[in-house]
Image 1: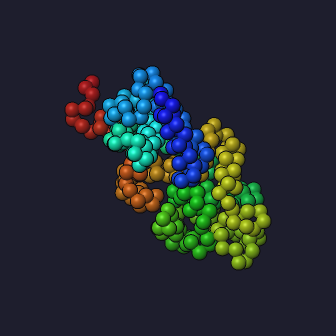
Image 2: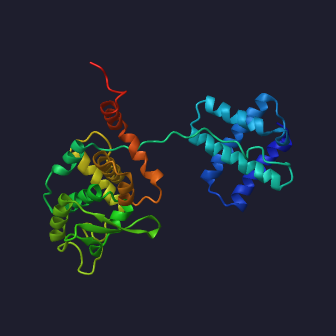
Image 3: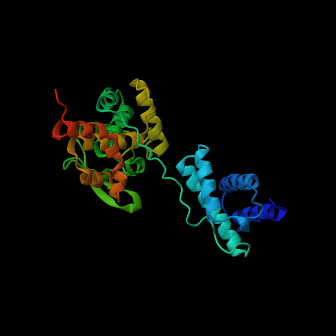
Length: 300
């Protein structure tokens, strides 16, 4: 490409750093994506940015896909191109943005990992041998019983928990409040923890879960305790707090088939977010179809 075209890349990078104040890591991503475009233009004989049109950008995206780049990465690459060409348009170096209407292939949805019911039972089976063990079991039972996010669990206070009514008040994303049921096994574990908690936490400590020194238990501590208990239970996969939420949603859908109810329990604003769990249960649906549909039944 011409020296002038290369110079625009340097000016755009300064714009990202000084005007938009993007991080060095983000700017490095832009640099890589635009370098890929520059190299491709040189291979096909395009010498300057005004020579690029809509079809060029589409071909570049298609070539990136054929080269093994995932849909999500192509989306990011096209976003970099739109930003760069928008900058050139603002500076008067282009008459139009050729990347505006180019779409990347849809990114494949990554299905959440879960524990099956037997693995979950194995994880929660070992009885606690001290107060902190009782705390760990209680928080994991509550994770699985109520489908809480990690931040929701660590933000709980004593007042949020109503064991007599078998429910917990949760402050979710966007400070939205919801009431979630608490199951019998979680109630049992929580009562055991609460009987030990008084010896650890100060009388004025509001946090439901506290550490050895009586301070609120942080997210990282919860992650470490969950992983340690999973290793002790001999589970082969890495177990993290969100795995309880995924398992909660999947197991509930398998039994109830009530997507709206699961959406409410999880605190999802959009049901599309909840629908990812329906993919995990496709085999069950296929078996139901096979057994129920008159044209699907196999003949003996």
